[in-house]
Every structure is written in C-alpha cells, then in structure tokens.
Amino acid sequence: MRGENMYRFMSILKRDTLNLFLNPMWVILCIAFPFLFTTILGILTEGLYGTSVSSYDYYGVTMLVFSSLYAGTYSANSFLEERIKQPNLRIAYSPISSLFIPIAKIIATFLFTGVFFSFSGGLTHLFFDVNFGGRMLIFVWLLILALDLFFSCLGVLICCIFKSEGTANQVLSLITAFLGLLSGLFFPVASLGKTMVSISNFSPVTKVLDTVFVMIYDQNYSQFLPVLLILLLLSLVTMVLIGFLFNGEDYV
Image 1 (cartoon, rainbow, N blue to C red):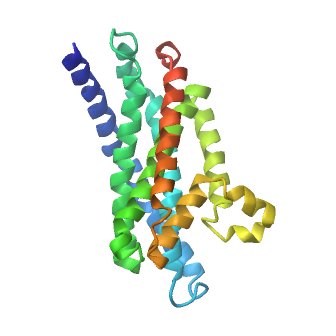
Image 2 (tube, rainbow, N blue to C red):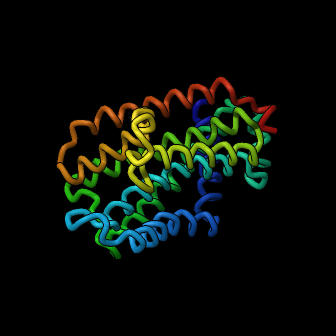
Image 3 (cartoon, rainbow, N blue to C red):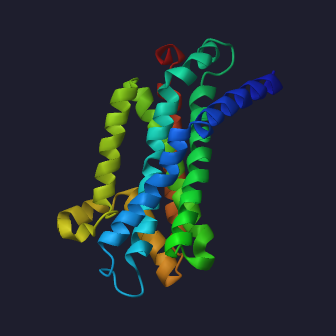
C-alpha cells in the first residue's frame, strides 16, 4: 500500500512539474523577469553605487531575491489552475491522502523556480559580471533557494485560505510588493524613516538580503545558518497550516 501511495504521489508530482516546465510563458517570465529588471535598473542607476559595488551587482542580487517572492504566485496558479486541477479531483476523493496535492504543488514550484531563477542569475553574471560571492556562492544560493521554498509554501497556503485564484493572486501581489519595498530591494529602506527600518528588521526578506550582502562583500557567513533555519522553520510552519486548512472537497 505504501509503495502504491508513493507511486501515485510521484505521478501527481510529475504531472505538476511538467505542467510548469512545459508552459513557455512561465518559463520566459521566470528567466526574463530578474534579468530584465537587473538590466533596466542597472542602466538607470549606473555610477551611483561607487566602484567596489556596481549598480548591476546590487540589482543582480536584489532582483533575484525579489523574483523568489514570486514563487508564491507560481504555486498559487499551479494549485488552482483548472487545466491541472481537474485531473487531481480523483485524488481528492481517493483513499490516499489528499495532502499529496498541495505537497506536490510546492515541490514542483520549488524545482521549477529554482532551476530557472538559477539560470537567470547565471545570465546576469555572464552579461554584467554580477558578484554573487565567488567561493560564497553556494551559501548565497542556498539562502535564496530557502526563501524560494518558503514562498512556494506561502502561495499554496494563501490558496487554502481564500480558495480563489484571483483573490490569492491579489493577496500575494500585495505581500510581494510590500516586502519588496520594506526590505530595500529597490532602494535603501533608510529613506523611509527609522520606524520603517525597525519594522523591516522583522522581515525574512530583509534578513536574507542583509546576510547575502555580508557574505558577498565581507566574506562573513556567521548569520547564514540562523537565517537558513528561520526560513526552513517558516516553511515547515506554513506546511503544517496547509495540512490543517486543506480540504479536498473545498479544492473541488
């Protein structure tokens, strides 16, 4: 029975993963979004960041972090998309755990965004020589991937709460925009005042960004493990909430 359940789960995961990887619009968006934003913002602010850190270095990192927040949108669309939702209906009413559905969405989204965001990061390094930390690259990438995982989980959780693709996308857009501005992904958060700086310190995105830049330019990874564990804990808590809130009948 356990072997049969694993086979069914892998079948769901395969279908969900192929649904993402074979969607040309999502693939292009996933690759182009961080690359184009890095290009545009890098050109507009060229010369404003000094000699040791170029505008491309700054936005190459921040736009990749910002793109990771959109993993929630991909998982939400995958979760509630009718074309992929219909084949999952029999799973929701089958004797096996209906939680296979949201778990498969999370894993598929994480794999999809992880691959193509990494590819986009490689392009920005190739074209603009963006500094991703040299020998610290693996630590930088693990933090960004952990943030990606958290937002993949968050997208599914929002769907379980609101049960509407349109509403879920609107909520996720607000969360993404707020965290992007609050965490200084586009401009230094200090320009928003001391109160906003204090609030931003509670954002996991701020912690990731600060830790990434410290690792890249100070070769200091003392905060790597604590921030990584925070992101993994947030992902775990989010998945537990999904377990409580997901209902196969509501999914239909």
